Image 1 (spheres, rainbow, N blue to C red):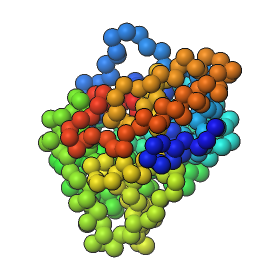
Image 2: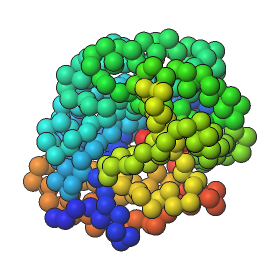
Image 3: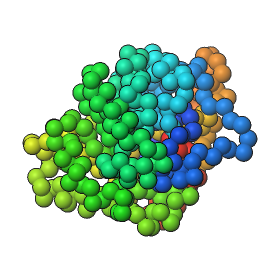
Length: 327
């Protein structure tokens, strides 16, 4: 079986694997009304199904897996999931995107199981603003979790901040001060329009290009991406231990460097965060003997991947909120 390559010669080294769409935060841009169970009971991928799907992707050239949600650490078997994915020696990077709720308590166990990289969502450095955005008064708990990650030996922590005009755009000086002496890659993510978030998008969206202009004027230098990196443009400065990343999905040619695929918590393959209905893989995850069929389905379905998303036309596909297939 060949490396995963689509019809536009893009190579795919990166899998974003959602393991639950349940979340205990109520972020204004994602789940403002909290997690709403779907109409019929749904079972998320089991440990064995996760083991099988990541084995297939590893054999198709995947080098990086990110566990997402919802909030992935809400799964009681989260540490076992980390260990199961790490059985694939071809996967060099195993990351998680977390709200940090359980980071201080569990990060040592996650590291021991094989987790190599951590992204924590922090949308404000003001505890009251953090509470207003997330619906949870957990700012200090999340900050303690980031400290705990460093204390157990992580050399870098990535922090995701959804850029919003009224909520945090004015906090850039505080964010820069925060990372001056900390090896944090602070990643500003442009607010993206979803089916349930159209009004918020028009009210709060800010182009990351504004921040890029400010950074370049202040002497920040843009680095280069490796083939399994995410979509961030990363900037460094000789006076700062930390880095700044900008994720700008509305920028021209954003999709030209796409290198990632998504599998939802119920086992559907999604070729784009903002695409149409996913393709089920679950019927081929029941038994180890189905591995070759599974790989063939993944490979063949990739040939239908479109050249670009359609966010510029206001079309967010089936993505009603970002917990739906893991952001």
